Structures are given as structure tokens and as C-alpha cells.
Length: 225
Length: 350
Image (cartoon, rainbow over all chains, first blue to last red; front, side, top):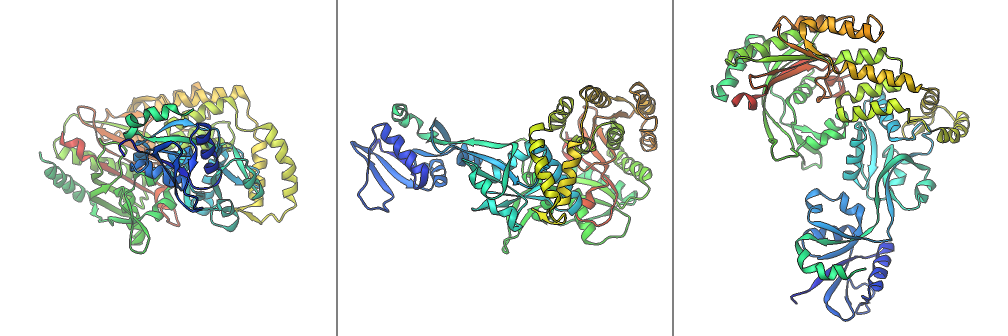
């Protein structure tokens, strides 16, 4: 089909629910073949729109390689992706769900560390006393690096984390972490606290599109409210 | 003269002056470097994973690579080396090259500091003369003077450390000066809240570690921090002193007099810059050398003298300096002082 538009939606969780609600608000009603695990869907009365459910991170990747024309995913995931990928993707619209902040968190008992400036100082102490670097566990190495270096914190080492980052400081895998949080509850429950000026990024769900397809997509994108 | 001839002739001078060829490894362990130099170094490195999953990188710099070799070989106390080879760096812009030819000398385990500083500058000046580049000019500085100035000022200890550490990041340094003026990093509300916690934590086992930091360490830093008041007017004055210091730029023969004038004008301790023998020593090479305090601020490992040599069109053709902390930060157990310099071959060619 010539005017086929492929849209990627998050396959689970709050991002999925929010995305479906957003489409319905725009009178785009999803229909699927009924199988619970089916990754494809259609939109009623729009035979030229194809929906694919994907992992939120995958949506950014597939927008970059042209598999998807449009996608809904988190701003954090776009900003964390490599620069050449980011250049190919544009934000059409910020949506009012999926709000979350990427923050620096330290153990609650580190009462002397309230600001990034404190952290910078402790990281140097750490180097001088132990001759190793303060370890920062994160799922967001690029954003974390950019932020810390811009604030003068250079004496650290990143530890890649895939999940449950909050546990790292207490099992000896890192000293501090950066992580995405919406209410702050998980951090609090795990005896962590954010720094006063430790906000790395305010994230939310967004409608993204592939820049290369901009001309073809404009009429449809502009119809979204 | 062709660049190959340049190198050959420069190396002749290096050898004549007693420097011995060192051939550092091309492949280095990335984690080793990051563990010791910090994550910001990673941006420069070209890395890959070997078969065992270990992250390796191409040597980003021959000074660092030579120091690693020196430590690995467990070399004798004093080692005068030269290197000639390629260094590989990831570059942010298309203008910068990935492969850089580096040619330079180092005195590792340097004992007689003023003497070795002079020796390095002299060998570099000789080699530039040898390849018949005329009308060069030299600029020198000494980053330890800045440290001495800061030590002598009446500001909290942690601010001293902070200013000294970030001397290398002029932009962030400027942020720091602005913050010092406005006293904005102790929040009274947060302090009150944490005072309660402070007394609770005093009852804990003081050797207990929380994310690799001892309770005693956390409490003593907290205590120091809240007892660290600074008055606003004093800070403004101090920031002005620092800014004025960084404006000093004069002929090397006038360096001592200019610094003394600065000390007098600002009522500083007479002995702040007591020992200027190293700087005065360097004037032996060329009496027209310029002295600047705001200089050598782009390479973090310098700790003492720094110098640059320019050709007639003011392009940098060589630079060097003293870096007494680098070997320790690369894993040496004891302090090993060092001084070195490199020729910028790319700028010689034009």
C-alpha cells in the first residue's frame, strides 16, 4: 500500500495504556485479531495504518532505521540513544503521561551529601583515600556522563545496570546510582535520596516520527490533538 | 625541510642530550586508565573488547603510555626517555585527526626539579633550533603558584580544594568563583533536618560502612560543612584577588617584581611565592620569554612549570610541563615526579 503508515506502540505497562488512550482520544480505535499475544493491530476505518507493539527502547531504534514511521516512547530513551540515531528522529508532541525524572540518588545516610558539589568533593576524597573511582550504577550511561562532567564531577566510573539499580549501593556493586523515578517511592523504600540539584532529565511520553518520512506523515501528524 | 627529516633531526638532539628511546604498548587496558583517570577520559579513547571480554584501547597519549610502561617495567628511579609514534584519539569534530604523530621527551623520577625543568625546555628549544625554525617565542607559567595563592587565602578548606581541582576547567572554574561570591551551597533547612539524623548516627558503630564510606567519615564531613560559614563581603574580595592573579602576564624578567607587587597590593602573606627559582632559571634560555599565570589550564596533570613554544605565526609548535602526580594516579605506590614535553609535528609542517 502506498500510503502505509507504521506506528510503534509500547508493548506493556503504563506507556502502553497511555498510548492506547491517546489514540482513542483522537478517534483512532484499535482492533486486533483477538489473540492475546499478537504484536500487530489495525485501526478501525484506517486500513493504511499498521500498529506494532514493541519494547519502548526498540521503538527508538526502529524509528532510526526506518522500520517505523511514528512511535510513542519516552523522551529519556531518545536522549540516551547515540547521537546519530537522535538526529534521525523528531519529537512531534509531548504527551501528558509517562512522567518520570532521571535523577542522581545517594544513600540516605550520606547526610553530608546534599548537592552535586558535595558529590564532586566526596568523589575526590574517594580517589585520594582509596585510589579508585566512585562507582555510579546506571541504565543511562550517556545522559549520566554528560550531566556529571558538566557539573565538574569527573572522578567516577560507570557501572552498567540492567535493573534493580536501587540495590547496587547496598550490595557493594556501586556507591551511588542514577535512575528514572516517577514518585520517588522506590528510591525511598530502598534508603536512597535524590540530590537537591541532581535532576538530569525530566522525561515524559512523546510522539516521535522519523525525519526522513516527514513529508508523507505531516497530514496525519497534524491531525493528532 | 620534510617532516621525516624534522623527526630525524629532532631525535638526534634528544639522543645527544641523553634521552633513550622508549616504545610503549599500542594497546592498553581501558579499565586501568578509566579507573585511574576518571570517566571523562573515556570520550577520547578508541576502545574495543578482546576475546576475553576485556575492554582494550589504542593508546590515547604517549605520555600516559610511557608512564604505564615505566611502572610496568619497574624502571630505576631516574629515567630520561624519548618517544616517537602515533597516539589515537576519538575526535568530536571532523577537523581533529584521529591519528596523531607524537614526538617528545620525559624525565621520569626527576630528582633535581629546577634542573630537570630547565633540561627539558632546553632540549626542546635546541631541537627546534636544529631544524632551523626561526623567530620562535616562549611562554611559561607555573601552576603551583596558583595553588600557593589559594592555600594562603582565608576561605574554607573544601573551597580551596575545589578551586585547585577545577583550575583545569576554566568554564566550570568561573561558575565556582560566582558561587563562592554568593555563598549558596549550604541549605539551612536541609541542615536542620539532618542534624537530627546526625545525632542518631552518632550512636551507630562508627566503623560501619555505608556504600563504601565509614559512618565516622560521613559525620565528620557533615560537621565540618556546617561549621564552615563564610561572610559575603570577604568572599567578594577574595574572588577579586583570584581574578587579578590570573591576569598577570609579563616578561619573565619582571615576573618576580610583578608577583611581589601583587602580594603587596592585596596584603597577602609576604612568603606566598617565596621560591621562584624555577621560573627565574627558565629565563636562561631566552630572556624574551613571557610569563603568564593563566596558562597551562587545559591539561589536568600539570603540577608545576608549564611552557609553550610558538613559531613566527604564533602557532604552538611544542609544549610541556611538570606533572608530579600522574605516575601516582596511574597506580604507583610512591610519588614519582616527572617533567616532559612534546613537539607538535603538525604545526611544524606548515
